[in-house]
Image 1: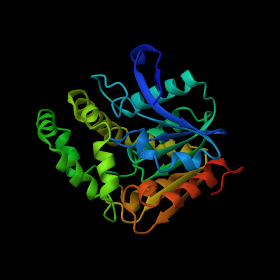
Image 2 (image 1 turned 90 degrees about the horizontal axis):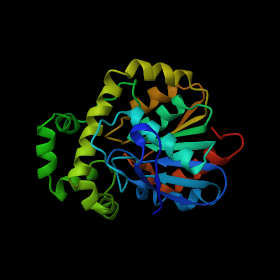
Image 3 (image 1 turned 45 degrees about the vertical axis):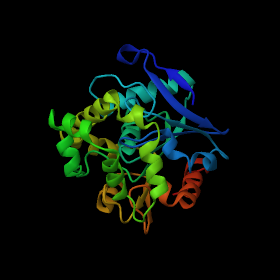
Length: 283
C-alpha cells in the first residue's frame, strides 16, 4: 500500500496511505467514520477498468498518521487537497461513503473547479437534519468516551456493524473489524476516532446552515446511492440532500442498509461507472 507525505503548515509530514489502480479519469474514494481504503475492495477493480482509482486512508484512520488534534471536516478537506497536490491530480470525480460523503461534499464546496462529479453513498451531509446515534453522542463526551473506547471488546465492533447491514454478512463484518485491528484500535486510533466525533459535531450542529446553503449553490452533477433500510443515514436525509442539489439524482436499493457498495457491489459499480466516466454524466 503506497504512502505519501503531505506538505504545508500543520499537515507537514503527515503520512497518507492509499490504494491506486487503473488508467483513465481520476476517481477518488473516501471512506466513512472508522473506515479505511480497503473497505472499497469490491469496487476498486471494477471502476479501475475505466478510471484511475484512488482509495485513501484519511488522516486518523486506517494506516495513515493519527495526530493528536481536532478533526473537523475542514481538516479532512485540507488533507485530501494536499494528497491530490502531491500526486498531481488536477481534475477528478469524488465518491464518499457515510462520513466520507460529508468530506466529499465539503471538498466539492471548497474546490469546485477540481471536482467534475460527486457521488454520495449512504452519505451524511451537514445541514440536512442528520443526528448521530446515541452511542456516538456518548462517545463524544470527554472522559466517558475514552473510558468506553478503551474497554470495548471486539464483539462491540461486530455488533455495531451488524446493525448496519440489511442482511447477515459475517465475512464482510469480520473484514471491516479485523483489518489492521491493532493500528485502528490502539491508543492513537481511539483518540483520532473520538476527536473526529467531537470535531465533526461542530460541523453538523454549528455549521449546518452554512453547509446547507453551500450545497444548494453547488453546480456539479451529484449522484446519491442509498439503501432504503439504512439505519444510520435515513432515506429521508438522502432525499433532502438530493432535493437541495441543482443537478442531483438518487438511486435507491432495496434490501440494503448502510453499505450499498458492499451489500450490492455489482449494481453500485455499474451505476458509479456510468455516472463517473460517461460523457456527459449519466443522471
